[in-house]
Image 1 (tube, rainbow, N blue to C red):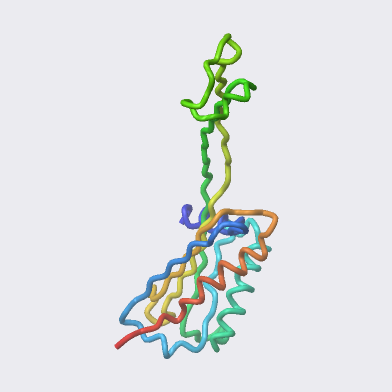
Image 2 (tube, one colour):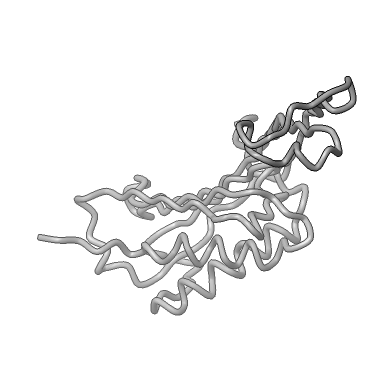
Length: 191
């Protein structure tokens, strides 16, 4: 339960990606009948996990828009499915080493080796090398949306989105991630 609360708290901070690609995956129960799903309701989020209520509301708002576009309606009494939110984030560090070299200001230096005149003096033979290491710290967020059969309480569908967190574009990133997740719901089932 403690891990679940942390997961939800981190989900509230989720502001997936602005410039990078959002990675989306989904999986579902092949035996579930998605054609009978007409109504839904949200599973409650533990109070401890509600650190960022506004982000949670934005995620639910974006999901409600996607579900209503698919013809589903909210039913607080007897929904066909229940929806649970999970999330998390992790810090990442990219390290890039770089280097370059350059020679003297002698005009012959830019020529191919075989075309250079015989160079004389220490300054004409100088080669300098510069190098360094750059680091870039960022966070990668994950949003997980679970759909549970309200009668059997079994997980029937899961969609995940993963991408770089950008606090400047939180709302747009949440909308994009939720839309991409629900592009695969309900799944196309072949018989």
